[in-house]
Structure formats: C-alpha cells, structure tokens
Length: 218
Image (cartoon, rainbow, N blue to C red; front, side):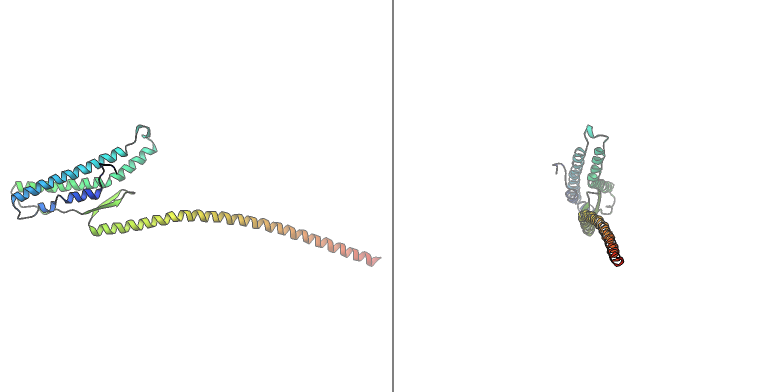
C-alpha cells in the first residue's frame, strides 16, 4: 500500500478519537469545553489530511498516461478509481457532516444558547472493493455484512469450481459423441458383415440345392 494511502477503518477510528459526542456534554466548564473543541478540531483536521492524501494517491495511481487516453484501458482505470475512491468519499461526506455539527455547537456557545442535541456516528466502515459499495454501520451491521461477504465468497468459490467441472463435462460429452460415432460405424460394419454373410449363406444354399437337384435328375 502506498505511504499516503490510509485504511478507511483507520481514518474512521481517528475521527472517533476527536470525541465529538463529548463536545455536546452538558454541565462541563468553559475551559473543558474549549479544550475539547481544540482537540476535536485538530483531530478532524488530521483525519481530513488522511482522506485527501489517500484520494490524491489513488488519483495518481489510476491516472492513465497519454498513450492510454481514449482507450479501453483508460475506461478500466476510471472504473478502478471510482471503486477505490468510494470509501474515502464516504468518509469525506461524514467529515463534512461532523464539522457542520461542531460549527452549530460553536455558534450556539457564542450566542449563549443551549447546547444542541448530541451528535454520534457509526464506528465501522465496510464494503466491497469489487463493486465499490461502502457503508457506515454499528457492530451488528458490520457482522451482518461480513456474513454476506462470506456467503458471496463461497458462491464465487463454487462458481470457480463449476468452470473446471463444466470443462470436464464438455470433454466427457465430446468423448461420448466420439464413442457414439464409433458405435454407429461399428453397427454399419456389422450390418454389412451380416448382409454379406446372409448373401453367402443364400448362395451356398442355392448352390447346395442346385447340386442336389442335379444329382437327383441324373
């Protein structure tokens, strides 16, 4: 993995280190509130850098050179980029929402208003790199996704095994067809032999009867 490419879950974990829900705690001192806000903002800024560095790294990795522009390779790279960016764009959207909530809190504090309702976000990010589908969820949702992914992998494994089996069945069918052709050829040869033997027996019988008749007439 590139040095500037961070794991999506690691970035989400870093967002949680900002302790955003703690900012909305009622009854803390102004000093504590200010300390928490400073820590949260710094941590969110760090997470933002991780996201932007990852996005930049992926764009560099999947940007086609001039020779590949307009070709099928360019389209393939664009699709890989889209799928690879998906979790980071999801985290980027989440970060914007978190910052928006933090700003509402600061505005309320500055105006001497009541602390707005607390803000929490999910602890897991998970998805499928093959499809580019990514989600945020709690532990239960994460476990469910892992189960679904396991089922998918099992099905893929079955399909991979099915392909050699299909090839084997195709080879077997070809062998059966060849055997059938040989059997049909053997049947035709046998019929010819039987017909030849039948004609020989008929000629032999006629000759025998003719000979016997000659003797009788003599």
